[in-house]
Length: 86
Image (tube, rainbow, N blue to C red; front, side, top):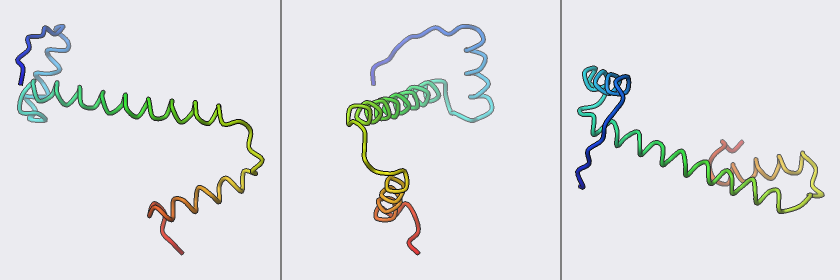
């Protein structure tokens, strides 16, 4: 793993040290890597949502009613095990 050297502002340094002192993380390195990992996941979710919105906007107007759309979503969720079947 490449070694890096970074500087933190005093409030950030204090916050990092407190997290390690409270044993939430074993080291500042572990904490910083976790923060980066979380940000990458957030970015991935953001881009997936943005792509879905763009797809929806470009797909045009549907002739389906709101009830039709709801029923399709519920059917798909049940099929994927996201809702209990009754």
